[in-house]
Length: 208
Ligand SMILES: [Ca+2]
Ligand SMILES: [Ca+2]
Image (tube, rainbow, N blue to C red):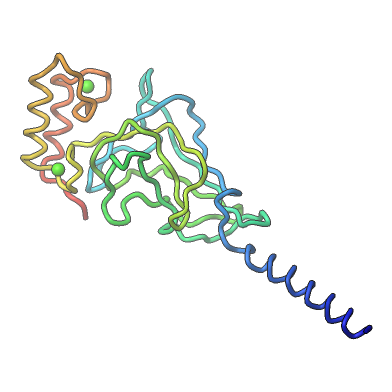
């Protein structure tokens, strides 16, 4: 009888230990965070070859803003996970409009001792989006989103800036009655001649 009771306690202890082992060191997105100091929507300019702007040179309603995304990766206990690989921390547009090159939208570095990393370096990406941005940890979304959209001279998100994009831009440029965000490369709520140099400078750029 005493032995059976002891066995019962032993089994319970094993279960409790297994539960805590399962979460330690494994990211739990409900315990992770993604934050931007800037409040309000901001747009980041991407070029597939990485020659776009960093998140610290985003454009908001009133001009240039720092839209750097700070991410903290915690496990379920919750405790910070250090050295979590940057390849497994990436961003996407909620509507999929921003199209990243392979590995082109990952965090700047693996996490530090506090489980922290950030998105500040230019992405390697094309396409465009006015939807918010989500952060994924090994494919699992951190709940919520940040107010960042994207534009790019790779208008169609093909991974290259070429004649197809020029034709799309020309179509948007010649119909000023309808505002086409995708061609507002110098983001100021109007598509005009000031957007053209950005397209011209990027022709021929492609994913690495
Ligand atoms: Ca393209
Ligand atoms: Ca413009």
